[in-house]
Image (cartoon, rainbow, N blue to C red; front, side, top):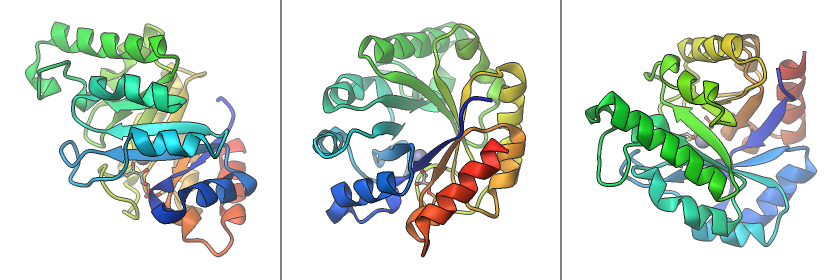
Length: 235
Ligand code: DX5
Ligand code: ZN
């Protein structure tokens, strides 16, 4: 599998000290910084948007891995690109195209086209493309886009998106195994409840990009937690 990558989620940081918190994580060994964007519509929580990414960009060169838990993800591509985001990961369930509300309500052809257009738009804006799956979304649905070469990373959610600090859902990692089997070189990210006591299941399934919020920010020794996560995935 591709290189082990640890991405602390700044959702668990002190938002009033974001620049320092990001620097602290990078100094402690973070490979990427995971930025959780929530719109209070796709998920029942509100966090941060492109203006905060633009401000952070002035303080860090780190790879900003932006996870868009928003409806109408096509709406923010230009803003995030301009803000300096490196990765734009949208939820497959939200990729309905302008004016449509629910991906499931579209015809299969229209839904496919909306996703293809969005992937191309993100690349055209010079960002990496990620597609996220909620725990209940089957991995077969994302495979065609990966096979078409439109996607740099698939994010397998191991909690329901919306909040940090939830419990890892072990059944969700089977989706990472399905994708790893099909796509040996794909970046497969897991997000939600990852910690030293859950990492082995994600690693065995073939995940290589590990998001961790509360486990890292809540730790007495965050560097040790990041090292444990990384060595578990590299083994
Ligand atoms: C949840 C977010 C996660 C969250 C992970 O909706 O996508 O990135 O911050 O937090 P922990 O690691 O605490 O589960
Ligand atoms: Zn996330």
